[in-house]
Length: 453
Image 1 (tube, rainbow, N blue to C red):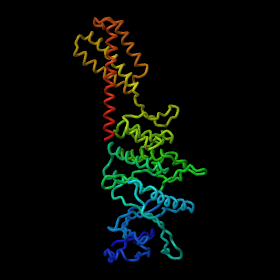
Image 2 (cartoon, helix red, strand yellow; image 1 turned 90 degrees about the vertical axis):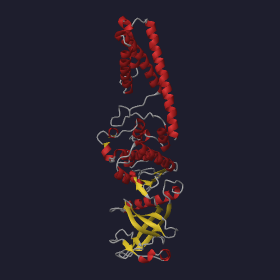
Image 3 (cartoon, rainbow, N blue to C red; image 1 turned 180 degrees about the horizontal axis):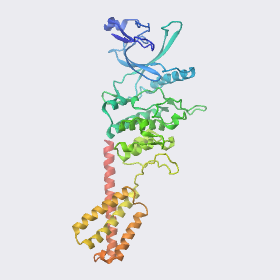
Image 4 (cartoon, one colour; image 1 turned 135 degrees about the vertical axis):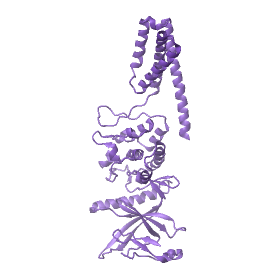
């Protein structure tokens, strides 16, 4: 059986013990030691490291088998192992973060199916390989999620589609809502910390940078400065207080990374202090507005909870926060149309369309040609409203001018009395309002049905 040595300085960590291929021997042997450096290999007397999974900023992860569990259950053994030379205060802080991850997993891992369970947390004290002193190592053992993280998935399959990121967004938001309700801020949301198990279920990993928020007098909510560059919002990078919206910002950057296939620093324009991403992908305006609101620079301008984002995703549209013009460099999403604006626009289109139809018919004398030209002009009018080239006072001013032209140019009246022209125009406006209202009601009903499904 192959057994991997976990001593960081061991030059030949791979070991092989033929006798451990016998399951009875594996279960009863007292201990095995690395044939190169003498490091104990059976951690806490039960966990057998068999493979190196990866190294991070504060630890190394190994795939291990639990010899005390029937079937030799797989698990992840994380060893506290800071990279680089740290000052004593930095080392102490890093160790606290590692211990905090164990505490948080013990608290919430067993309560939510999309957070790995904690199996064990223990120290190992051994003689130094060079001799003369002792080394102390800390280990955390957690549930093994067999699958790929989203960073690996992105590298393998390429950019994600809108339905794919919506699934990720909705699933991770539910996990964050659970975590935030327990006054815990993850503080390190990124693609490599979201794992998709082979059956498709998503898991949120790596609570090593977690921040527990306390309202106790004298308690500190300041950030410890542990974050992933590009995914952290301004308040976290400045070492200030963190909030649930801090995690929402990082989740939005994660979604942009998956949608565009580009790193965060390629999407953020430091000169204008804006995220430049909309031109790179084709997504619905609703999702784009939600992501832009999650990415606003000020924490209080974003959604304040994961549940708010979940509700926004379930609605046909949202009205995002609009940044005042007096504050340059901040994102200003295009506002959506209110119900009043839709109905006013419909009344304008119907009224104006009826006047144009009367004038064209009197000039051309052909109902078919009049209908075609009128449909084209009406389409242009509606498009101009969607682009907000026509709005507010224009909705009243343009019909008044058109009506005045028809009144003062008798040739355009087509033999119809002025009172009848006004009546027909008003009727056109009312019909347009009715059609728009019916369409909006049907759209909302269908949206609710599909969102529930």
